[in-house]
Length: 291
Length: 291
Figure (cartoon, each protein chain N blue to C red):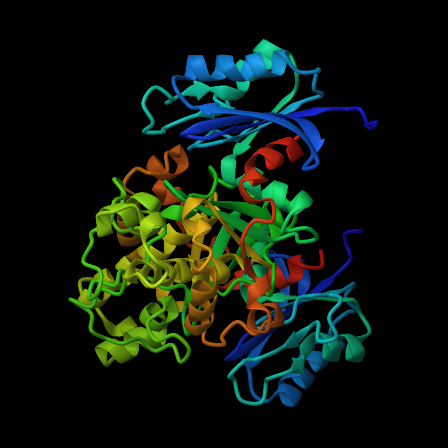
């Protein structure tokens, strides 16, 4: 590819879409707009790309669940989402047909992970995970250098954890599982448990110790299951950066020396980290999908 | 390789070693002996191979924790095991130096997973896990066609789960974590909780419903984290084959329709399965490591 080749990216989120054209974090033109109906939202994305110089390909990181199997008849579709109107929406197909460019389709979290692998906090790693903790909780990543797929794709937010009923009788908000991780520790769980939006709480509010506790339990489970070389925590809830030292300390306490690895035991500050690309991990990762 | 090339395998277990020479499940000469001191046990393995026709290479699937990084000075060693005398034992180096053949070193569960991938219940799959539930609980597998490594290697037995204190006040037996999965559901946990060896319990003993419950919670967590195409359950505890239908039913109940995938929803009997190679998965997998 010569230096003038441009690439496109779409971060298809449940509340907002981000479209961009460019080549890197230092060369990116982007537009954001709210996610409304599929027809209106996809038309707006298509109009954005039509107004830009032609791109070689477009990568899409989408909210889900999604169909990632290239040989499936519903490849590129959002499948069983509860989001009104979006069930069975062929996102990749609509973009491909309208713009006549190659399209690659991924989960939003896998795209963000790829962005961090190319330009951010996961450079040089082949096995790591990226988690977003916000309206929902999701996770993706690379294992041995490949984006995680498998049967469908990971749904890391829905693991079950010890629920600390003694100090937390709150039943959880997940409509499928009640007190799974997302049910206990997503933004809506925080808001419903404490009766106010969590970003208004001071750092010494008891919400945060409980939040760090549940997230640390989850990270211990991912570490034992996948043995990631690093864990990146993004999403709105993690903008409370005071959570990081709490989570790191609790992860070490919970592992209790069992996983004998210097990067974990001696350098936990570099093991559990925020995304180096910040809120741009997703859109840059969408671009990276096709570069 | 022509049809007369022979391969060697060692299943290095904490209680027994299995050594074998051959080419497939239908062509395998093996010997088993108890794991005593490292010197004595490795000498016995070396003597076995010296008495056999020369092999092209030897694969080793070992109990752990182990060092799997080929560029590490302690590659091929058992590292921080609590097993007396075995800490920092250079298993791969000892075999390589004595027999002057290429050696490949893996976790016991990754080796067993590879055996199942080549000849057993995971043929044709690129992402699946193999769990052993016995004296300890461990897991390995392939993700996108590659054996799981990462920072160290998975330690799937040490994930944390909701502990059902109401019907199970037993605190767990894991010396590191108390009531992690291994602490609650390994063979020693069953024996200590109920005061007798579990293989003596009839299928309607309450031990089994609780056991199926904890294992189902663990399988849900692995499914959400990795999205495996299949889960293979081996090890001594799973010789209680009546556990399989319980576990399958509880996994579906716990997922509650969230993961919309026909292999899971419509064919759970083929999703959670015993190893097709039975107790030979480990030794055959050791062979497969170098074939």
